[in-house]
Image 1: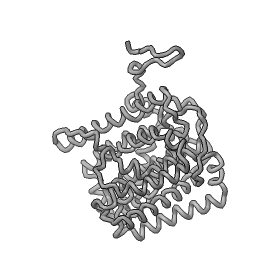
Image 2: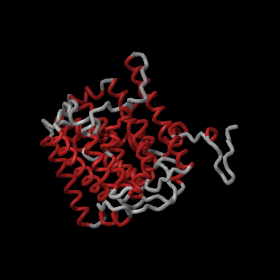
Image 3: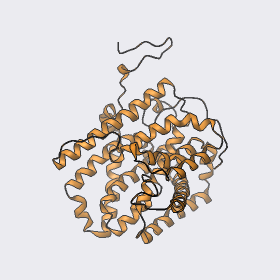
Length: 363
């Protein structure tokens, strides 16, 4: 992918789950990709309870090698026109910041309730999957920077590599934000011709081979490899990575290459035509926010402990369950029910920016 500066169009856009974007023409390829990658997110979070099962650990390793890089890449493409307009800032506050705060409190409260422990909330330490919401907020704010620097993708790769040398506390998941940054920046500079290239028959065949081959490799070679590298949340020298500078830089560089290659493979093989998954892909935020509560409850009830005794059979059970759960949470009835809570508009809280101006509509 070229690292030369290409100026994206100047029109405004919003987060994938906001009403602003829903009124715009949508690319079914991206909606389909969001749907399938969201299912991988749910499956990965389910398989994390079964890491003592060899096949589950191998499948989990494969999913984590590319599912978040692909999600971040798509997010960068969707946000490529972000310029910080009042409408875009309002959309970020209501679709990212408020859900981040609410979901952290809700997840910590849900765990405390199940475990009969006192509630302890730390918004600087994201609860489970909430890190992505604050990361997307920071990446979006940084978008103007990547329009003015030379070789933005190359610069972001250097930032990602060097960030692993930074031994600081992971406040607000700063290591993940910086580590996965190249995928967001690269997504900003994707163009339709890149997607057209990925749809060529030979590329699609190669993509299937790449995805299947890496899955086979992970199933056979998962033992003795730290899956913690795939979380992007630790400095190289910190436990559990415990790597020297050279080893850390080399491993992260390899993960960046793998993430880009497999993300491209995913975009190559997902259907490009509009179908049922296109509609479901519009509501990935609902699944992202809600699936954790279901999985935490199942774990508390001992479902995953029972599944672990099934050995390799537990993997297809979790995968099928993840498809059913993720699809249900992305459905239109669930969207109608939870969208006012997951992505509240709160028009009363913002100034009226229409023609003339700065009137506070809440007063």
